[in-house]
Amino acid sequence: MRILVDLNLVLDVLLDRRPHAEAAAGLWAAIESGKAEGMLAAHSVTTLHSLAGRSGGRRFADECVSGVLTVFGVAPVDGAVLRHAIRMGWPDFEDAVCAAAGEAAACHALATRDASGFKRSALPMMSPLEALAALSASAS
Image (tube, rainbow, N blue to C red; front, side, top):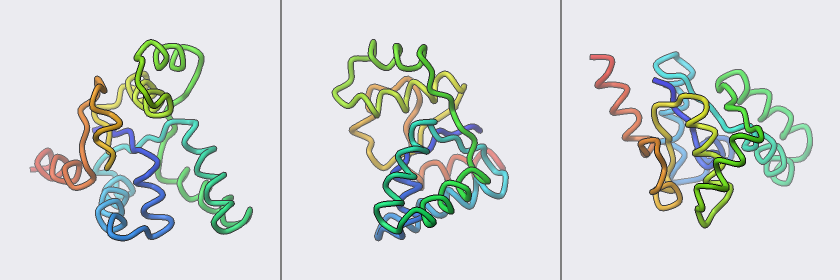
């Protein structure tokens, strides 16, 4: 299963944001162990670097991005993805770009804890715990 992972879940793990970190870390571990293929939208990686840099400086930001790229693939964001996101007409363009990137990368689901931001997504939405349950069910 290929899952587009919303940046908030990655930040929950890297910044140990309680109470969300544990569920997000479980999904991260499942991806890292090969139970699923995790993808991040390309623009999420630049946002991650910017936010991590504000939190812990340039070295921390570089380490975060390097570490994330050893676990997650990158769903490209190109002109076609951006045009599709615009046509979606969502209130939050960034969420639309994530969903459009996931569609273009042939993801099977979108893992997020912001279900309201993605309620019009063509990809099924899952919380981290729902994604873990789906992975366990598919492994049985």
